[in-house]
Image (cartoon, rainbow, N blue to C red):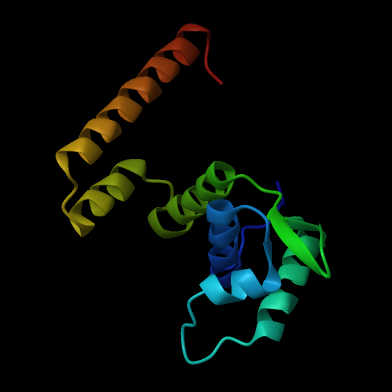
Length: 135
């Protein structure tokens, strides 16, 4: 994965590519939501070219155009962004991070059960790591 985290606009383009698979600049442009006014086709083209230089996307011929595809995995990018947010905003305090996330909106029972399963898995991994002597 690329060493840097994607910008908000790059993340938006990546989400399009993760959802659609390979897509032309025109297709990505059509699906990206302009934040403030129009989003020019050339802006999306420049964005994808910059993202390719960073290692986030690649491209392949698709007729007369190029189809861009994600070279980074969704889970890896989200893990990097979440870890950065945890460190930057909460100084690594995971309990406070989770508490604030749970306070920010009301989770469904299914979401809470999914979180409980993740916590149980993390506990098992931590116990195994501790039993083996740390790190």
